[in-house]
Length: 184
Image (cartoon, rainbow, N blue to C red; front, side, top):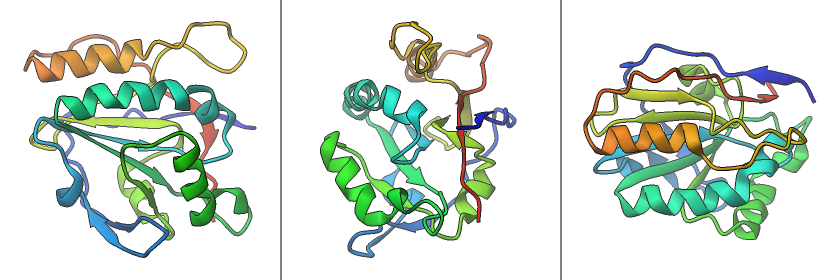
């Protein structure tokens, strides 16, 4: 497991559009299909990363708060499934069912979307405001596998609260840390 930090792209960047399959029935979804009225959280994850597995139950619970506040939540897997078959679309379906996802889990087979977003690791979080302008990018919280910090979504939750309240967010934004995206 190679620990990789997310890239801290410029706040205010516009969310790149995409059209991705849910990987199961080949139905395609665009960003405009899935964006929320009050903002959109895009997260890059995969099924086997210990950093993702560490937060996923907590995140699924936290995501309900976002969805309730009309913030769209979109999970994307961009990993190479030839060398990492555990991240295949059929396994994505199993993973999403196991953890009761209430949001779409899309497959970026070409890896073009991850490149457009400059995603680097799993998990990697991008919170966009209602105008699809990047409001927050970085970590979920300080917790990591085996560091004994409590999972609390503090960093992402504080950013979400500022965004929903239309307040300027000047807090320090720390990179996420996780497994590198498995590039082809």
